[in-house]
Image 1 (tube, rainbow, N blue to C red):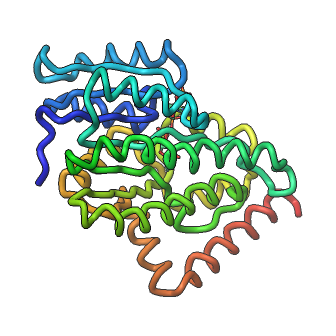
Image 2 (image 1 turned 30 degrees about the vertical axis):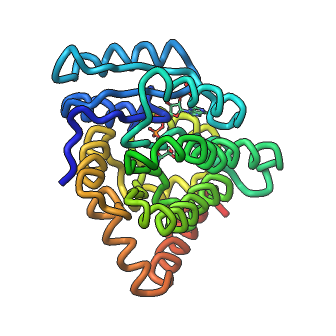
Length: 276
Ligand SMILES: NC(=O)c1ccc[n+]([C@@H]2O[C@H](COP(=O)([O-])OP(=O)(O)OC[C@H]3O[C@@H](n4cnc5c(N)ncnc54)[C@H](OP(=O)(O)O)[C@@H]3O)[C@@H](O)[C@H]2O)c1
């Protein structure tokens, strides 16, 4: 079991939701943290709240404003962070957006591109930039995918595609990093009660909402706690929440048939209620 005391942990998306809750837990276990996101005000608030959870005053809790969708910004800021705080022992890629959850025909190229640039190219560029500095420390890369990367979802052609892509990235990366003594963890949570859902709710079709309700919702505190435990155990693949783990098991055992039949029924029933 990995300990976190004295470890340097970078968290993209560390100013909100799952990333922020994970930061609080890591701080409580003695880690130094660098929180990365765009909005400086939110970052400053996050630093103050994470400082309250730290074990000792000697722990550094820092933040840096960066847009993970902008490769030049990532390269500049990561170089500055490594110089100032040291390379990460653990890099958590939690920054992500769930905008444009809508019928595929309503999602323009630009909208799709925005989701891909943040959710796929974002982690890709952050990992690629920090990898040389992480190698000598035999670092650990953690990628936040989603249950939406494991199963299709009504209204998730952009977000689901981005999260499925991260599973491909993690799987291939794991083979390359393992011989170097480095670790990869990929996490697939179901819905977690964070600000991300407010964005999604603006456009998510009712059929998508009904499908998501099948897997239930986790609190960010619970999600963060079990994800940190999976990282400590150096688990490669982790699904938070027993219900989603069960649905995924059924999905695999029935080669997708179980989830397709159930989800088709939920979509049909929802559309009937809507008068279609
Ligand atoms: N919540 C869920 O239901 C759920 C379920 C499964 C998986 N996930 C995944 O878990 C991760 C965390 O989600 P969450 O629910 O914690 O979301 P959240 O509360 O909305 O937090 C998202 C974080 O990402 C940052 N961010 C967004 N775009 C960014 C960019 N271009 N550059 C840098 N930082 C950026 C945000 O800060 P700024 O806006 O200030 O940049 C914020 O700190 C995401 O990857 C998400 O896809 C979430």
